[in-house]
Image (cartoon, rainbow, N blue to C red; front, side, top):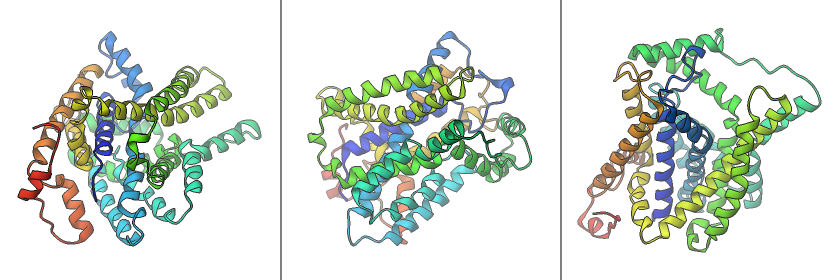
Amino acid sequence: MKRIREIDALRGFALFGIIMTHMFQGYLASLVPPQYNGFNMFFPVDELSRFMVRNFFVGKFYAIFSMLFGLSFYLILDGKKDASSRKFAWRLVLLFVIGYVHHIHYRGDFLTVYAVFGIILILFRKIPTKIIFVAGLFLALNGPAVLQKGSALFFQKTEAAPQNTGGKTKLELANSYFDLVLEGEYKKLLISNSTAGFINKYNYLKSSGRMWIVPGLFLLGLWVGRRKWHERLEHIPLKRLILVSFSIGMPLVWINFHFSRSNYSEFVQFLGGISKDASNIFMPLFYIGLLLLAYKSNFIGKFIKYLIPVGKMGLTTYVFQSVFGLFVFYGYGLGLLLKLSGTVALGLGLLFFIMQMLFAQWWFSKFKYGPLEWLWRCGTDRTWLSNKLSESDRVSLKFPVS
């Protein structure tokens, strides 16, 4: 399968946003206990960093990554009539195994989520393209949750169904997890993540709406593949895409920022929630348009193309970002969770991402696939594949930097 460099660059860009988001959050994946609110607010600039991350990073970059996952399904399976759905299902099983190992270390893992929700792509393989778009947009906008909340708000007052917390309050669970992170008891963290961590993940997916949003983004990515936009990137009116998505996305960000606060009425907060989910569609489109336009630039494009190798090994990049974050913040590493400014954490994330770009470029000068990508491919094909580049591969390999 011929790789599309712009797609790899977009994936690398999404991974940049993901590590920046997680670094600012201290690689926590749970509620922050009240006594630790503002744990990374050391300097006035940290307030600005928090504003930027909350409004322009959270929910935006993972949306790009998720849509690209759906597009990858098209490139691997849906665009090939003779390709086996069973093989893709096995690929998802292996992804879940990799994700499980990742999850027991970092309960914010999304590989297991992708593996489970990826099944919807198989189920929609034979569905007409128009239905895929409508269903994808409805789910990506958190339609089921909006209908449920709207119904409860306007027609009947119902108490929210209690979350499954294993008999403990959410505050007790948050305190327990935060203490484990600070103390750095590795074995206890593994046990907690493999038990309470999955309950926490389910509750988060349900309360945040990502239980619907992630499959919706997958379907939108599949729709992009069906429409073959990835093959016609030069024909996309990028300036119009940028203008329209920005004109819609920025007001939605503003509405969410102002109206999602607890001191507003339930109806106003309801509107704020809708605007948040909608902004997480339009702002990613704005980012995608900007990056693709920059990619075409003779000057800026040279720097954008550094994202290609790191995006090509997206699985490896994502997992090792977690390894770095856990080492920096958790007690069994450097234990800097309560000692690091949020802005400084962003700086460390940026430096590590630059190192990942350089490593990825070096790696692909010698190997065909990223380390975890190679293992995943071997497992999918159930055979050990050669990963070393042949001389012909080296000649044809033309990454933008030497």
